[in-house]
Length: 87
Image (cartoon, rainbow, N blue to C red; front, side, top):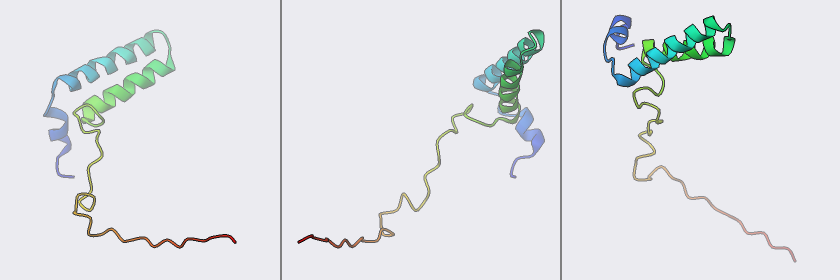
């Protein structure tokens, strides 16, 4: 782990992270107010993402391309096919 927990919690607070934090608090309060488990879980999910800066909040949703997929194709083997004919 390259970042310490303190660095992850207290740095890089951008607009989307604040929005997720506010949405998490809102859903948790609504879940407690109306005794709704689903709202509370949804709020906990958003709050967790905002606090830990994980998920798709900062545009890191894409799967990173592997270095072998970006190569010129030298790893690709030629496939041989055999044609079978019926009489």
